Image (cartoon, rainbow, N blue to C red; front, side, top):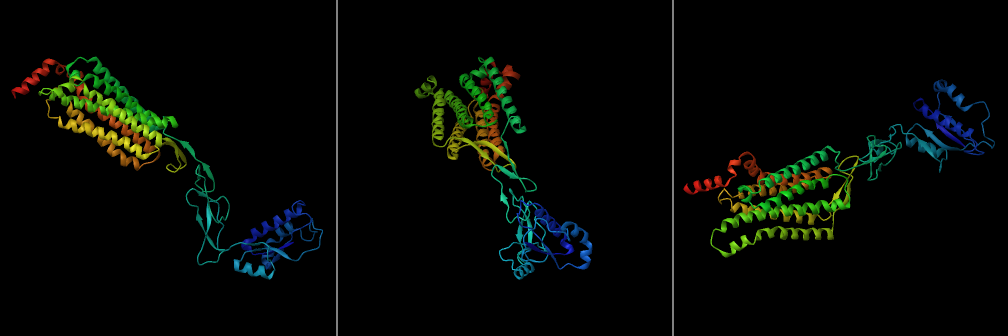
Length: 449
């Protein structure tokens, strides 16, 4: 069999490579047994022949017997290597009766598309002329002159040259991550601070300022806030199914206890001053400590909502392969977004109820009244979570998780700072004001005024 090669100086490298490959095939009797390949040079000029004569003579072994050739010579060409346009190649192919035989045209109007690029046809040029377009994002081509790029699997991403798919690294909000480390340090620091405040109140348990604001509810609130500050630690680290369920349920229950305690404190302040007015019902509510039942009632309602959430569509471990390039983020999917928003809505309704009641009791006497502090704490809590929702829905991946942790810490800090900072200031820095004599003098001067 004999291919037909048109030669010119512009493509002599292709001709040399073609002849060299032909000779290598002929030397190996196992590739094409009892068959030899040959070639003929077409349309070669004298000057061109002089330029490459020695190379052709060395490659072809002209004047010697053709190796591995024992049958009669075939004059029919089986392939055509040209340097002209595709139109010329097709015409020569028909003249040489190349039907059902390969044609090997090389386009003179386009360069080969290297890996990372694909062919893109030109509208006004022949079909063999094309542009080289880069592969789209996360697609590759690992061969020359590919017509289409191949999309990488979801667990892989294209390298910078877009000629190879690399496996994505698995990541999550870990304690080694700077963001995770900062959030965990803030969480532990605020928790220790809350424990310190609780220690101050226990040490001064019998002082007037502690007695005046319902000591038992104050201790319950401080203990709950301590665990609320530790709650973000569940959001940091490699998640699993148990962690994903505990994240939302513990967060919801702890915040419900904290807000219902604030509501009970606010109601206690209002009833304490209403009790001075004749009325059996108000006195009975104070004696029976009815406000304290708000805490278990509100908590049971939240437990019911969480139970419905976990039975219908519980949180589960999910992965995000698109937010960070080259990374697969492992995080917890909340399952039912409706249930999550119902839990948040219930917490905000408790905060709004406490805020409303505290606001209407702000005009009561200041000596025993913490309604102003409760009002500001509920206003801050409500503002944090109302701001959190649009930010939460506009972020993804680890940033979304960090925003939820930040909202938990900020709302807890608002409760701790607004309610207990003024009391700690008086207890630690102005102890002379934390006495029964000072309070009586202050009340007497207010009456005279």
